[in-house]
Every structure is written in C-alpha cells, then in structure tokens.
Amino acid sequence: MSRARFVVRGLVQGVNFRAAAAHEARRLGISGRIWNRDDGTVEADAGGDDAALAAFEAWLRRGPRYARVTSVEREALVGQPGERDFSIG
Image 1: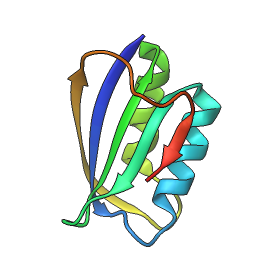
Image 2 (image 1 turned 60 degrees about the vertical axis):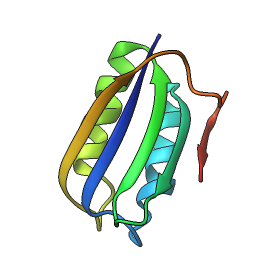
Image 3 (image 1 turned 90 degrees about the vertical axis):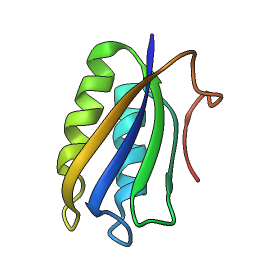
C-alpha cells in the first residue's frame, strides 16, 4: 500500500470535481479524502496500491467533463490515510 497527496490546479472547483474524484477513488479501491482549498485548487490524500494510485492520478489529470485541469502535483506520504473509505471534505 502507498499513500500520496495530490494538488490539482485549473478550473477544478464548482464543476463537480470532488464528487467525481471520490466516485473514481472508490471504484479503484482507494481510501482517503478530497477537499477544496482556499486558493482555488483541490487537494486529495489517497492511499491504495501503486497501480490504483497511478490510475487515480491519470484520472485527476483529466477530471470530470467541465473541469479544465492545468497541472497535478503528487507527493509521496508515509502511512495510510485516516479514512477507511474515500470522503469529500
């Protein structure tokens, strides 16, 4: 199991990004949470196997239909998220 922090930039707030990302994370078997930040970005703390996290990152780079992602920053974290499911904050 691995854990990563993702920061997604672009038009990612107000376009159903968090709900769609949570749905995708659950589909991939990823635990963690996702939330809007005050600077207009979206941040996610996600844990799962390496292949699932790679697939999640690829999805974050596309986002849902109305999102316009300009960049995704990924940082490896130690341990597992405190969540057992994937929640929206």
